[in-house]
Length: 326
Image (cartoon, rainbow, N blue to C red; front, side):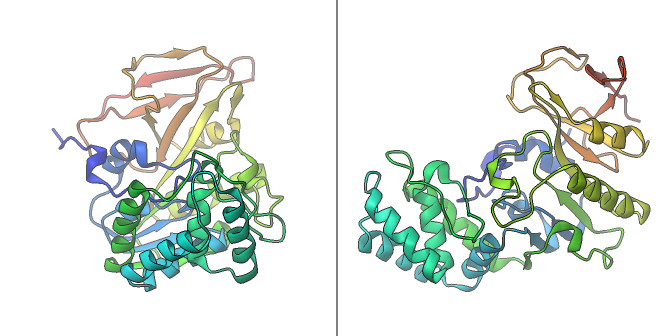
């Protein structure tokens, strides 16, 4: 049996990024290939996946330029200097759980100067720790009164995050996924994708804030890019949802069905026991999956082949069927 993996083994990002994968790392990491040469995180977001992968080289990419600039700053700046800057700013602006005026003043200062470390502090004190910009690339998230602040837990996670950035062979990139050159990749390399989910898209990636949004056009471009990787024998994994509330990602389902070498690995979002023979009729259920173009080399996690059966041409029901592995 493979070693039991828990989240205690992983670095937790200091960014509470929407859609972050920290809570399910123990499920998806064992599904990744072993002995990766170059690992590419095409949509790095908060970095929970990319910062915990073991590979000779790691490339972290995201089209949110200001986020990548912050990562670059953390990568190049001594840890003590980062912490000194943060605590000095907290004192300078009297930042707290209740001081909205101090937060607004720092936000105005950041939008004028664009110091990445100030962006980190703003995120720490903002509502739900969200990263939001307007069409002019000004940070515009509201104050997280009595909810968000730079606490000891965030500081602990930040220290581990910085050490990983500085001690590993990590390259940072801020290109749109379709513009990132992957032609140099070989069969021992691996690409991970955690894009905005087509059927759960929110205001943070709606395309009205100066950054590319996510629609069926982008979804199709990504799936086509993954097809090309598969044609070259390059392994990939795609995090996504097949169903969310009353919506179904039919584009994704048809894509998986169209290639017999693509596999669906079920992800338990609520960590409850589940029946591997499930006929899902609950329209409020979210079904999260990891699509791979290889069979994961594990023995302690069930690998699932999703049998996608069109009913009344609407794909309005999903059947899980356990697939026996050789």
